[in-house]
Image (tube, rainbow, N blue to C red):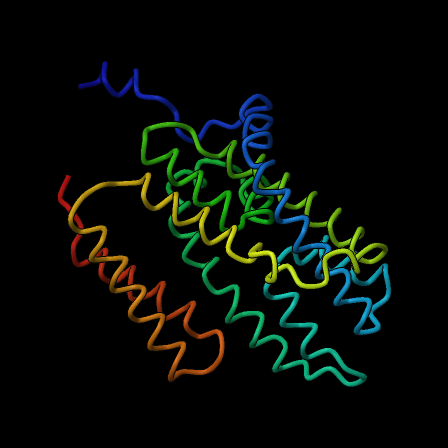
Length: 238
């Protein structure tokens, strides 16, 4: 037993090679992220947000949908409480992301741990979780891929501030479906068992009901919690 433990791979390892590999693997998705960054840059300029504040928002916040939601509330007098509540609701899924990543992040120092979490988004989280489930180190994907997404998002924002009229409506090109299709592919490549379709069905059903009857953006939290509870109830003994 001790020999098996000694030979087991260290899934929490993080080095320059793994980070660079993660960066390269997320570049294809990052290109589409840059397009949405350009759309945000254009929207920010139309709202009267200056180039420096818009760029700093993308650099420090790094949350696409939350930033668009903030623009919708942007005015001469910003409703601060409403803004905070809206952004929190949209990004509440990061609480669950952090919980799922904790088993591999807990061995790192707090500086590294929270530094990595600063660039966690849906795409690099999904790929790192898939790597962990296959017994491979995933922190390189998480951090390196997050850096790629972050850099392309900032670059896209800056391009949108200057040349954003080129992509006025990404939805008209179907680009709004790229991230959804990418995450869906991660699901199909993950664990294959009867319980997984049930869990995803519960999450989707709860999300759709919340989208119809609960306040805006609450469907994100409702779907995540319902799926998580279903997963706990149906967890397999190992």
